[in-house]
Length: 315
Length: 240
Image (cartoon, rainbow over all chains, first blue to last red; front, top):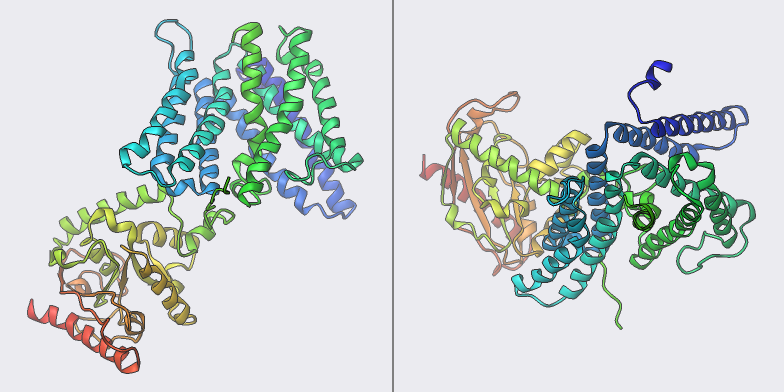
């Protein structure tokens, strides 16, 4: 075991591997005891849990490989996330718009990897932040090139939402990889956002009485939501090693962004799904639904966290 | 404000396996790309290995819906017919293939739906339902259905009796039916062989037949079957 951990690995990544790895082992043991000793029905939880058992090691391996692998991983999640959105809305049938958004998301990835030619730093910040301008200009040109107007405004609008939300806002998570403290930031975000989700679910199950947003996501409760915010507010202090340079303001803001933003992200995908009349955005992850069902909170939180860091510390 | 009209894809909550088996299929960009690549490879293969000759490709009413019928000797038949269709229409060309064979397992379904773009035809159990799917398919302008009305692969260049399906499909409609005749396939890839042999293939495409003016009924169905069988057989006879 010692040998494996002494592999050239970032110390923050190593700490997360140990913490989360132990959590997974404990979780498996609890499920095994519940299932085979106490004979409880855990089939459904197992299905979801198996999803985690695949996703978490994959995430660690990609982060361990390094910067480019992580950026490309986030590019793939963005592309498939947008594809799910496009298929759920019906925009996918129109390959002009779908293709243009794919091009835009790929552009974001390229400018995340390329260095800025005028400053010798990783990531071309100006171009990354200007991508919405070019993408929207491209999308608005499509009806003109095709000489078509009927129904085009709806398609342009859906494509812009898809690009900005699933591409650009989510892409901030990829851009975060250019930071010196990339392991701490990315791992904390993923860990905290998932814990926020799980807390809302658990507190809701234990104390839930009042519906949070009945017309958007009827299963969520106010009690669950408040419990999750409380957990997310404490977590930055517990995980302070992820960003040792953070002061009290940063830690407080991190808690608010993850606690509130995470739930808003969740509710965002919920209202989209409800408006479209679909249950899940896809079926790629057994027990979890689509990619968007899994990363919904992360999309909302990543850009807010990113700009908080940039404001107080630079990347 | 009016509500927007969303159209979620029909296969949103199906697994990949179910998607590959299902019909009609929703468009997928990656499948289209794979299919184009496969079609290019097939065309090269036919050109170089079988020296495929196509006569009368200009008679295909590309752009409207039509049916291609041909004699059936080998697994090379459907791809050779598809090779006569312009590349940009190949995603709209559906060879009807036996569901019990071509969609038996997941890898076969993947091959049949991606490379062949096959329409799963239930020849034993639900023939009527499958015909309804075909009829529906031809309602969309530009769709091409490829049918081998003999029902199964024959041993030689003789064209055996046509089944009633083709007649039932087009009776009372103005959908053109194009008779085609492929020669050499029985030698190039006989039933039971594992790999095609480098024999020459010749494909003749005839004038489209239209049965829209005939009143529907069993006589018409039988007439259509015989008429097309004769046309397919003649294409072979007159040109060999």
